[in-house]
Length: 315
Image 1 (cartoon, one colour):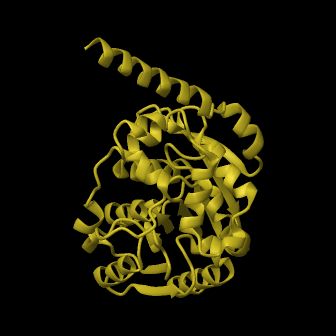
Image 2 (image 1 turned 180 degrees about the horizontal axis):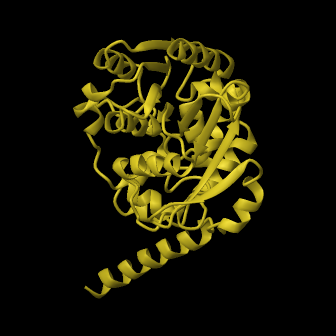
Image 3 (image 1 turned 45 degrees about the vertical axis):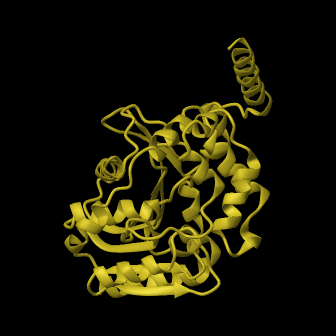
């Protein structure tokens, strides 16, 4: 028994030592805001006390396009579309709870329902009664659910490699996602967030490797380590998968465009065809040799497809 206790103490000390040695410290919010909250970034206070990071860009007299990013990403994922569509559209992007410069929120709600409420509070604060709405990955599931709950507000829906359709996950789930769902191991992620894991995740998600730069990797890595964000994301990954999008998909009334990377290893293209089948009248475009984030991998073509779709809806 004494030997067992000594061994246990040694193991615990080794784990503590490893955490101390390999730990990646939190980054203060103020440091990241100074680096990334450049114009036109703004912060909007929401009813629950959340301080939402938002960008309201483009043609302020044009139709409004609201865009919602995916898991572990930020509003900056939409900048390629802002650059290409901002001449015609007012484009609102935001960092979801637990992400980017919004970070942890006071109510601790990182569920899909919580994010739907978050999006609605932002558009309400901005005084936008109706708009086109797009989302990628996890954000795609959020906007689909939003369109189901608020059909009077959504003029058009754009799903980009969207979550929400139950099905088999891809064959290259990023290591960070897998670790985040492992008991005990996920507790270590509150202290250890290796840059190499961030890089590996981007390489798994993206086919067009030339867009993966040190700047991109560092931005993802730094946002993940903003004080409070690791605990927020641990809470989110502990939530059970919700079937709400699929269960209410018949409630979607908005004209819908579905964009997908054919080589998406995170959410396979089979989900694109499932959305297309479930949403009557939807239009599906699949991009060959493209991964999980077409708005960054094939920005010219995907933005042109969005412009053509929105133009047809606005007629």
